Image (cartoon, rainbow, N blue to C red):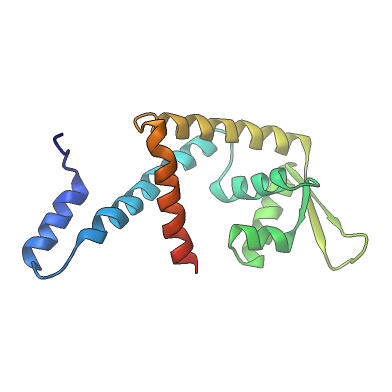
Length: 164
């Protein structure tokens, strides 16, 4: 089976040509992951923009949507979204101003702010999620189903190693 050359192969060949003593094999994996992430991020941003959302807005809304009680504290949201409390406050403020979420003080501890989806927030995050799934299914369409789980497993291993 003939292998299709892509831009990453050209970069690898270039490095191998100028540094033949180095093993550049990892670039085949990590450069493609990087390029995929960049391209997929652009697709996600465009899909979310069609629903009036920025990526950070979607991350907040979807975290709340997945939470068992339909609400999360600002601290939980910041931790789950890997952002600072200040960044999360700005995101929550933007979503409150749009009427997508509500903010309330925790009854047990007045220092804690709980954020809950409003019906419009739920409608928008659900529609955006369905659109993202459609795009993801389309992108994976060229990969046989039998090959997908091994790919997921290898990516999980890489991610665990990087996050450790």
